[in-house]
View (cartoon, rainbow, N blue to C red):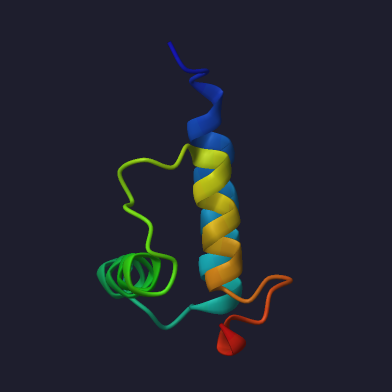
Amino acid sequence: MRDISRIKEFTDEFAEIWADEFPDWRFGQLMNNFLTWLSSYKKTDCFFPEEKEMMELFKEYAGKGVDVANE
């Protein structure tokens, strides 16, 4: 079984990025835009990444350390 503590770690970091980078977006907007980007630009199915990989992708989407405009 996966470590259950990963959930709070992930959601805490997710919430911080959401508040910092996308404060005006509703949750549905954020998820739809992120998952569309994930599928279209990264060619990644959201079903498969573990939380650490998903967080790295979300950080990339949010522009945390990666220039997504140049992909």
